[in-house]
Image (cartoon, rainbow, N blue to C red; front, side):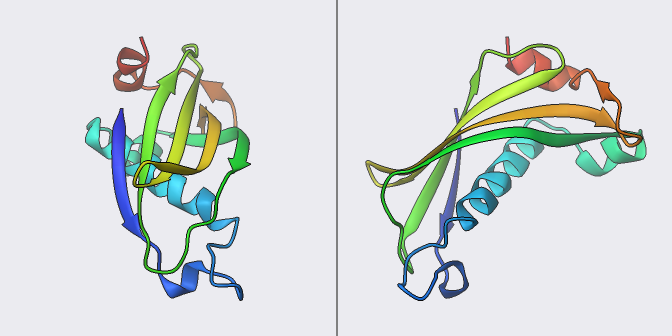
Length: 127
């Protein structure tokens, strides 16, 4: 499991002072980027080689609100997938409380849009 910590800033909140719902998608995207970086995958080099990651599907549950100045942790865990797709469970937590939970399906595709195999480093971790 990979963990990524972040703080809620004023710009992340709505008029009610809670995190705007779409910002949870930004939080989990940042966590995935750090997870990929920690695996030693250079996404800029991937793109130069003609491959990019793309989100194919997100299934999200909003369970409890986060508020300005909260310190949150995004936990990312691999679910069963295949050589061409990866399913991740990403939970946003404040302490022991899960605020947001998502299943995210990631694919790898060429810069022309054709689906291709995931990088070996990801396939190895997904076993």
